[in-house]
Amino acid sequence: MVLAVEAKNVKYVYPDGTVGIECADIEVKEKESLAVLGPNGSGKSTLLMLIAGLLKPKKGYIKIFGVDIDRYENLRKDIGIVFQNADDYLFNPTVRDELEFTLVQLGYEDYSEKVIEVAEEFGISHLLEKPPFRLSEGEKKKVAIASMLTLNPRIVLLDEPTSFLDYDSKIEIIEFIRKIKGKKTIITVTHESGIVPYIADKVVLLSKEKKTFAEGNVRDIFYSNLLEKAGVEPPDVVKLFKKLKIGKPTTVEEAFDIFKHVI
Ligand SMILES: Nc1ncnc2c1ncn2[C@@H]1O[C@H](COP(=O)(O)OP(=O)(O)OP(=O)(O)O)[C@@H](O)[C@H]1O
Ligand SMILES: [Mg+2]
Image (cartoon, rainbow, N blue to C red; front, top):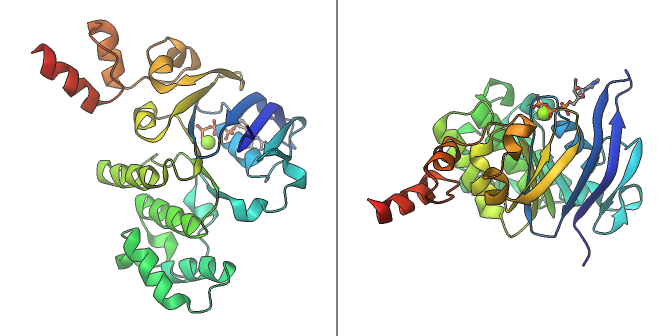
């Protein structure tokens, strides 16, 4: 079976000599959702930029749907990326212009109606006349994800989609991701383990040494000691149930179901 994304022995060194990633191996099937977890500076953002084709590996290779990334023709169309820092890519005077820009790229001629439709779908109608740089971090993330998804890419790359967001915004972003889960190939890089069970089927861990060193389904990885080894904090519910030893929930909802039966 052809993989949607395959990275093998990938190494990248920034022009100043800093190793961005030492050795990354990942495999993602079409419509699978992968989370890459690792501590600060482990190369998560670098890896995502390599998969988006924005950086070129110094060693190893990356294939998109079985084709070497250098020879893949529809890279810009098929891969959508939301960067860690929203200010890096929201550059139009207003949110409306931002969404129109996206639709023009897609070849829409009558885009005014479509902008309203997209804004409603993503709950950002009230932000349309605002300059993106005046938005809160959560609002910026929503606009960025909305405009990326409007382009309908086959592969979605998300860099820390919920960092610095309050509780409500976090839930909204998780809902955005859940809406596309199973419909698109998704790679989310994050150091927040708590969101992973909600958005991903499997996990790859990156170490402080900037190497991928473990891969597996979310529950198995969370109930091993590999997160701690990677320098990533497990969710509180996992920490608690490792001590209780009465089940292996990865979310509060799963834990609640277990308690219902034992109390
Ligand atoms: N433009 C750059 N030039 C030089 N070094 C860089 C550059 N960007 C990142 N690095 C270095 O590459 C390594 C990996 O950085 P990267 O941003 O990919 O990590 P990360 O896992 O995304 O971290 P964080 O959790 O803080 O977002 C770090 O050592 C970082 O200092
Ligand atoms: Mg990063």
